[in-house]
Length: 457
Image (cartoon, rainbow, N blue to C red):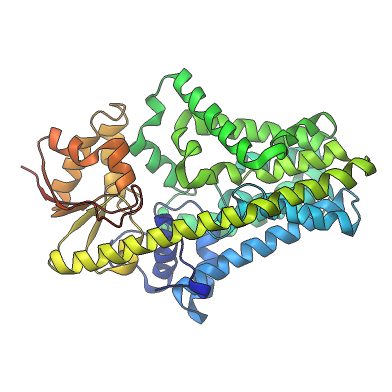
């Protein structure tokens, strides 16, 4: 079960995308009967792309090709963005190298998720806006269905593009944005009965960051931004270019609004979650700012661009080694947990899981998603108990989910157990959670699946 060149997605969420794409063809995910294919997803656009590829290639190959497509679209968008600022081809190549190698971007381009498509969509949206392309409003309409938070950027770019224009230009832009959005709106409404992806609200109810004091939220976000800036290097100063171009100002405001939304709802996901993938989707804005800052300064461009590209290329082997180590460790534990389950847990036993993707892809066990991405009823419990209690009733919520679903085992994840002690919280709520799979000696840090036998009175 590997993709081309031995590739494997390093995050469980990638398998949620893959099994959801498969469900668009089969009608359902067998492990989650009755759950809509798009339930709990972030990016309908990515799922659709994978689904289109599935009839002609193996599942993990389709997922890998979606990553390759995102990288190629992103690279070509970088070229277009550089040329839109009148850079010669030689300098546009440097911009492409910078964009493709900055920080953890190489890792995220093949993380199995929509991050590559997000980088591509933001880059192309800005490039087409600068070029005043007639296609730009259509892409603005698509942006929120690559990532929901990009609705802020789409609105900002649309407003910038029509500011000061006659009324008919406003109407034309709105109509073209509708053309881009309408297929996804219809798709989501058909699947979910609504037009907003449910992943963010589901995760927010489970994590309950919203209850944190404002100063704690601000401190977490600032720490996340500092960590991200350290990885990106001098390009993190790119927004200084806002003083030289209105479009950078508009994009910076959109980024600021998105940061406030993240800080209010899910600040913890900015800090460590998935190598800060939520922040990396906005990286093209910083590159845009740098280009605006250096615009017209030929000598500075000839000096700065090669140096920035060299810094990215020097770090590339280390970043890719991190990517490979993460993939290999995750894959080893995936193989181990499947083997263990088949040897220790009777077939058709119902498992409550904290990560809803891989076990649905690799096993036939009936599953209950404890977070709620693939079992929406679980999210309802967290909305009722976990979120109002600021997380103190999370164990009670998990016990309720286990009891109502008749789950016999709980398959957790090491990092969640280290940070939230989910099984311990369940015991405090009166449930019995007996650990039956202990940490393997080969486990890398907290990347392993603890298993608990459940009994809820």
